[in-house]
Image 1 (cartoon, rainbow, N blue to C red):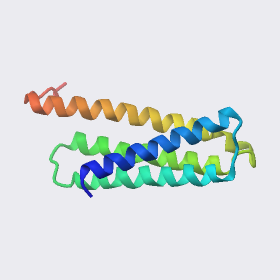
Image 2: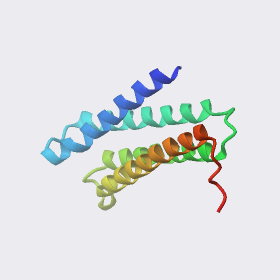
Image 3: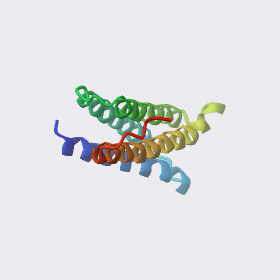
Image 4: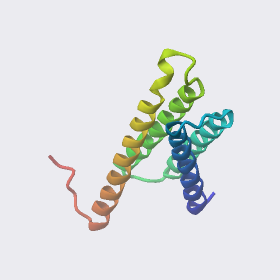
Length: 130
């Protein structure tokens, strides 16, 4: 798969996750929402793993670490989907929002950090030294 295909799949997965997270706030509760949320979380996980695998020849350990953190973010979305699946059935099932927000916060951090690191590499500066 090329980068464009991965990016489109990631955008669609994230949009579905966003829609499925907003619908319960509008008192919409349909059984198909669980399937859509779980499928989108798995798509996001698959894309993040594929992006990390594509970096196999990268020499920059910081970029590799950031892409692995992206995988952890996708795993948080999967954990959120599991709790979304059990919403209302157990007392811990309401924590799906916390996992969703934690995954989103990690994803935002990694997005900015990867951009910063790529710009630093393009400038050729070595600011890694304390």
